[in-house]
Image (cartoon, rainbow, N blue to C red; front, side, top):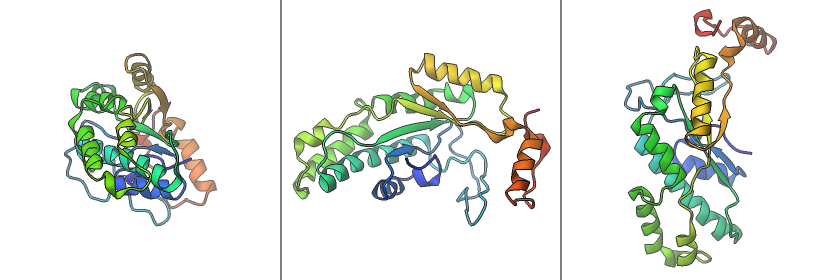
Length: 220
């Protein structure tokens, strides 16, 4: 159990807070090729229902990668220091969007391949080096433990798509992630695939009659 992709899994400290409150499965915040957009932030503000600004990456792809590496190392350290456990007891799941062309771009491919194996990426090496320099601060963590932290961060991925993304595009992306990237693949089902009438009905039954929906956003 753990948090789905969102602001709560975008920064290392939020992933750490989730871990400390019992989460062990982390769907990392979705990344996409358009990572320099000027949009209203934070992109999600939750009081009751949540409204999400689309194209909601708030960090660059490299910035997101750096946060995930920090969290990866710190969760290993916490597991050992607090619970004296060897052998990783948590899982990271990367998340990408929003179309096949973007996912196949060099930028997103670097992100995917880096989380599959970060051993040759400087960010990973730097954070391991910092921990080795600070090893004397720990009670149960030693150099061997730090050196044993795996560079293989993710072998699974979640596909997130925008509203209106046709089923054929979703299928093509899933096939690509399975056959060419060799990743266990989760497909996040976009409610717009259910059609306007079904979603309108569901909202009304739950009491959200005041939420406006645009039929143009729904796949016919």
